[in-house]
Image 1: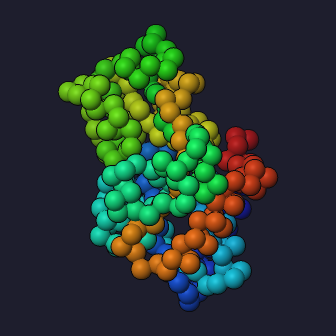
Image 2 (image 1 turned 180 degrees about the vertical axis):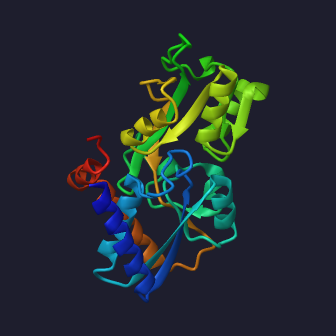
Length: 262
């Protein structure tokens, strides 16, 4: 199945590089090094995005350019209008200054993960060492110190006032987890998109404990840069098409099969 997915990726790259149409440049948080996927750069979120682009191409020619970047770099390019959008970002007021989110996002969302334009309902998990008896039960003030989080994650500002000098801001989940393993203390606040992504953290080490209670859950979107030249009518069609794929449980479950363990 993994070979079929890789073949599909090659065919898709050939298709988008050969097509002539409206180009959309999307940056994605570079998860490859974290999850040891340097040869296969696919994940479920990218599969959903690509399927959405294929649906859009039934009506209009769209060229997808997908770049893997550290999140801070991705956000910087979005501010400058050098990227059109970002794969899987939650809403916050600071990002909303330079990113356009789909209708019903953020403060307009009436409940957790209720937006029809979300591409994922996901959030953050706490990772500690198996040797640590601590068990997360919902209180964000009790994380084992030092607490490690990736720079640019929306939860960073939320927990910064709590942990202050005991908060370490790193460049990736992989680096943060490696540091915790080396020092044998503290915890890591890690982001995930789908539960299958959580399982990938175990590939780093069998000494990890991923707590079953989520720290937080929220809607994730593909916001578009306000400085992007993408026309308004395309933005709305893009959000509607990709989110319709993401919220189709039959389609998503079929995509997830290729990531299940044999």
